[in-house]
Length: 111
Figure (cartoon, rainbow, N blue to C red):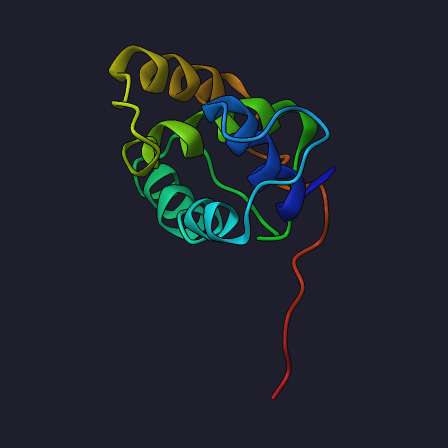
C-alpha cells in the first residue's frame, strides 16, 4: 500500500517538479492533492477504477494513478496534457482486478 503523500510526491516527480527524494513546495503539493478526489471520482464514475480508502492506494495501481494525476494537473506547471498518456494509464487501470480496491476493509464512521 502507498499513502496519499506518496501519490502526491510521485505525481510531482512525473511532472518533473520534484526530483526523486526531494520535497516540492507546499503550493505544488496542494495543486496535486486537491486533484485526487476529482480524478478518482471521475475514474470510478466511468468504471475505470474504484478505490476504497482515500489515503491508501494499491501498489498495482499506484504508478498509473500518479501518471493520471500528473497529466490532469499538468497545465499549472506549464506542461500540456497528453491524451495518449491518459488513455494508456486508464487502460492499464481497467486491467486491474476491481474486487481488490484498496485491500483494506471499508472504514465506517458511526454517528
